[in-house]
Image (cartoon, rainbow, N blue to C red; front, side):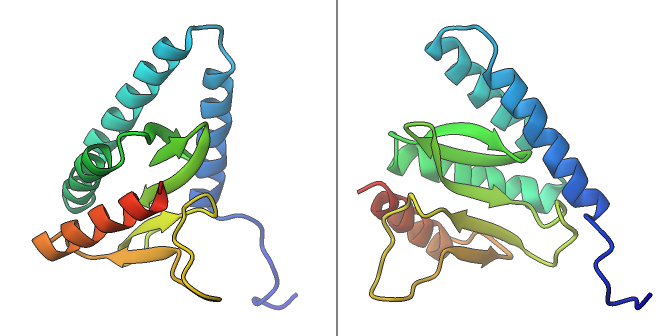
Length: 147
């Protein structure tokens, strides 16, 4: 058997799927919409607090930027990552570099985001640092995503 042959999911991918299953089970619990939203917001903050420093700093800034510039987006976890949803559908998410052992974190947008620009546009952005210029770009992107 060749080493190029598919070997299944990585440990990180399996862990993300298990986190997603927990999130789905938690969402199915009987509670009011307000209680679920508050719990989801707390879960996002707790997940951010668990991150290694460079990812945590970026995630904290992104969280603040998203909430300030797109208040219609609700924070929630998505495969164990901070994400922001509109009407229950993920619009954007932050993938820490350590999540899948990559060299940079990623801010990704789903097809729910209104970022269309012609016939091809970026749907994810690599982040090595959140500078004031990056903050301004993120603010502009999340505003456009929900417009």
